[in-house]
Length: 163
Image 1: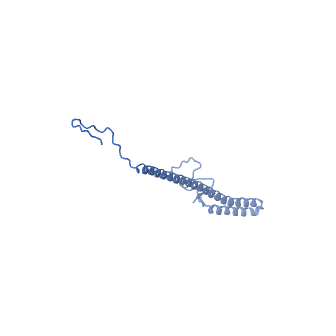
Image 2 (image 1 turned 120 degrees about the vertical axis):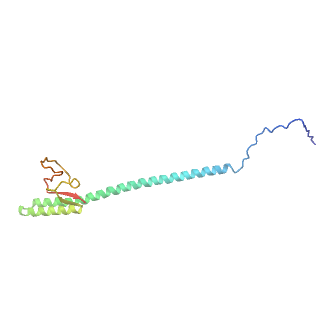
Image 3 (image 1 turned 90 degrees about the vertical axis):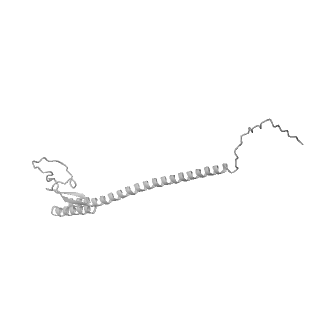
């Protein structure tokens, strides 16, 4: 058996070893799980962003193609209608003089119908008061009249407007 000696005059020696915090075995695992979960959420958000960006780019390209196609077809329809006028003018030029006026009148009517189909109508502009919302000035002729807007005189009797 061992003996223990007691010394009542000596103060007790403090423990020099610092107490280490108690580590639980489960502590590092939740931090790793949380980090992995955050990385997964970031990767998912990034993937959704990339897909959305790609979808938007495809949408933008599709809209541009559709608009280009629409303009192309509208121009094509208008060109076909105007070519019909050109064909009729060729026929009128080949006609004899007595039928020439009738043919040209038919072509003028056909041309007015085609313009109306495309939303273009004629307006009477001769000797009307100039309206900058409706008319386009192509020249200025000095006048002694003291009106704010003078009447228009132009080489054409009519103008056109688009609906």
